[in-house]
Every structure is written in C-alpha cells, then in structure tokens.
Image 1 (cartoon, rainbow, N blue to C red):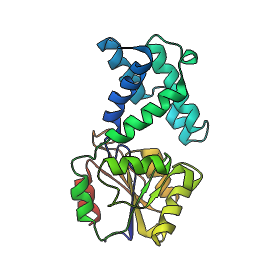
Image 2 (tube, rainbow, N blue to C red):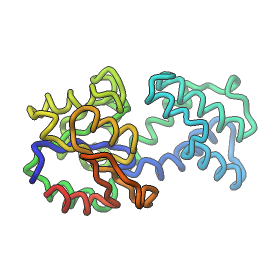
Image 3 (tube, rainbow, N blue to C red):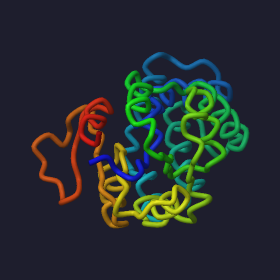
Image 4 (cartoon, helix red, strand yellow):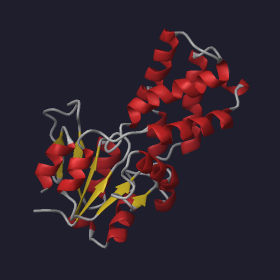
Length: 233
C-alpha cells in the first residue's frame, strides 16, 4: 500500500553531503592556515566525517547546541592542521564553510528516479539543520521545486529523534502520522525517531552496516532509494 506521505532526510539520504564535506572542510580551513600537506588534508577530512567524539550525536540528543558541536569539531580539525582554534576566526570559517557546502552538494544518482516513482505522494524534507540552509542545498542539487516542504530544526523546535519534526511535517502535508513513512540514513534520528512519533520508517543503509540486524516492527532496511521505491510503491 502506498503511504499517505513520505518524509525524507536530506544529508546522506538525498544529497551526498558527506563526500562534499570532505573537500569543503579542508578548503575552508586552508583559507585560514595555508596549503596543507596531502596526508594532513586526508586526516582532517576523515576526522570531520567520522566525528569519533560524536559531537553531532550529542547535539541530536540535546546535550549540546548545533553551534557548540560544530565549534568542537572545528577545534579538532584545526589542531590536526597545527593551529589553535582560539587563534582562528571561527565565524569567518563557518560562513565560508556553509556557503561553499551549500553550493556544492549534489543528489545521489537514484534520487530523481525515486521522486519520479512517487510523484503523486505528498513529500517533505525533515532535517536536523536550519531550514534556510537546507533549502540552499536543495536548490543547488536541483531538488527545490520537487520538495518545497522543508521542516528544519528551527521550525520544529527540536531535532530528530524528537517527535516534533515528524509530526510538524505530517501536519503540513495534512496526513496522520500513522499513514506516513520516513526515510533516512540514521538508525537513531530517522528510524527510532519516526517510529516513536507513530510513523513507519525505512532505514537507508547503502554500505550494509545493518545487514542481518533485526529492526523493530514498522521499520525496514534498504540499500538504495531504488529499493525503497519498490518497497513502498
């Protein structure tokens, strides 16, 4: 049965933000400290993406703010570059980082076919980043016209896995949560959050980290949006 609405995560689900971040975090840091050796560039990109101290997770669970998690991560990569975060103009770096990232993101190869396959189903983007910034990414990726409804953390008042973003998106689309499905790449923020809010959930797991894992009732795992289309259509 086709759902009454489909909610979608953005970063890592519709647009390849992780790959873009690898380049952008290095480029913007080099604007402050100069050209870095290749090995240092790789180490910075790896640290930013892996986030081993789980700063972004701490933000999602309400332990720290979005700004605080980004400052903590900036301090880590600055140290790898041999600089002190206290000595660098963080506000200048953040502005350049967001501007470059917003302009460079691109959709995954299967996104357009996925949207075409579900063109008659109401859709909304539900994200843990500010709505305005995510609209910039959608425009850069050529998806803005296809996905005009965007629920960012600024509108919902709390990030996923809190129920608020999911319920607000359902309300904006005029559907009951029980009739909607949410698709995202985070098992906690997207799957557990959606289920707790009363939606069904699809975990997008392209590299197969959850292969063989038993998911709660109402949740499914796919390796691509193409597979998700078949599952819900």
